[in-house]
Image 1 (spheres, rainbow, N blue to C red):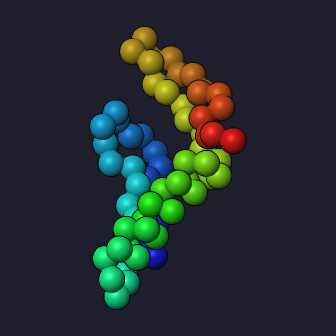
Image 2 (cartoon, rainbow, N blue to C red):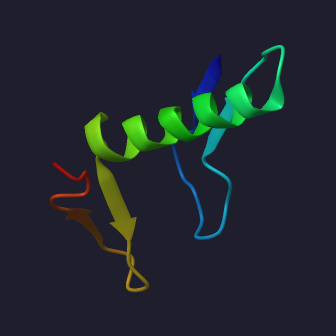
Length: 66
């Protein structure tokens, strides 16, 4: 499994996560990819700082479920 998560300035709609999985059968690959994405959503700590149109910034609280 290869997992990469982008950091830095990311615009809405930009890709931010890459998950690559190798296996003998595609079903196992899809299951592993799904499991990695769910783990990220529910367990990885993310900090999100939004840039607002007036030039200011704000931190989004409780950006990670759990």
